[in-house]
Length: 126
Image 1 (cartoon, helix red, strand yellow):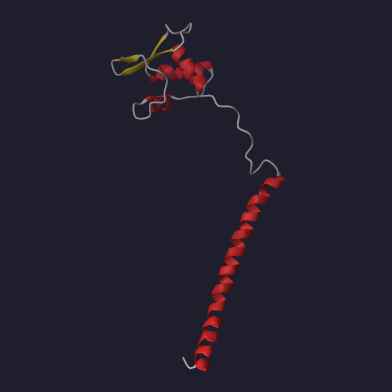
Image 2 (tube, rainbow, N blue to C red):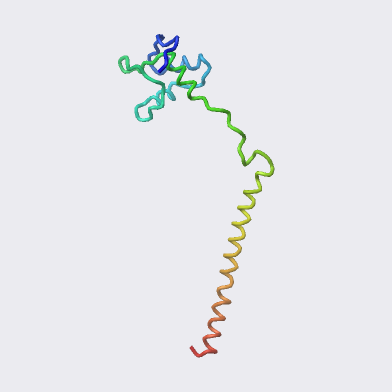
């Protein structure tokens, strides 16, 4: 990891780390840091070790981790980007409606088909 100017400034405990993050301008809480830094999840800031049972990191490591958590701005959802984007959904619904109607017609035709089969069985003597 690269060396930073504030790598000597030690932060002990999740509350101090959260205070530093909020002072720098990142909205993150102690509980989020504790969860992300837990061994089960292990996506939190790099820890130097523990002072008693308190995690220990530096301001430099916190700053690097906070900047790594930033993501680019998301573009608007494709579904709501413009009016034309609703058409694929409508097409899918139209296909589903057509499939349901076809199944209903087939279901309604079953008694007619059964009657035809019975009539043909009587005429053929089967």
